[in-house]
Image (tube, rainbow, N blue to C red; front, side, top):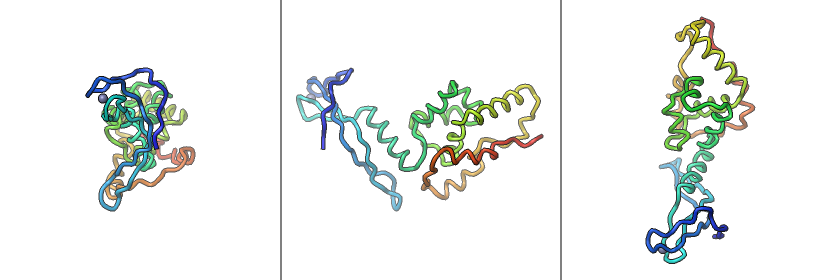
Length: 193
Ligand SMILES: [Zn+2]
């Protein structure tokens, strides 16, 4: 079932015949995964359809929406949600990386949809939505900078130690509502030196 959207702000022309292209939204089903974990996912995506010939194309927006459907399937944050969590704290990727112990490269890949974060990192990111947790990390970062606390007194980023568990179970379970995850807060308390 197709429905034609109103004219777009940025009309494009067909790469085949130069005729105007219109955007048509439809529910697109696509296979995801292999073997027993293979599923069919659905995303409502915009398709660019030529008004002059039969040419059709998927734009970047369609890829983003399909990636979001995959994230939904895994029960993890999608790239936009990760970026929104970071931006809510007014931090660039480098600053967010320093604060969280996550790498700038990983954040970059997650926010661009190149890779999907592990379940452990996804839960960690959800905890970073809380201003209280970010405040605690800011304080820790300042203490480390000023030498009041030794770097060796805390473990590396969450997820690093539990990745073997994730690898054994590629299927993510739905993590539920972010508020309930706040119960995990003590995990992020730093042991005294
Ligand atoms: Zn055309």
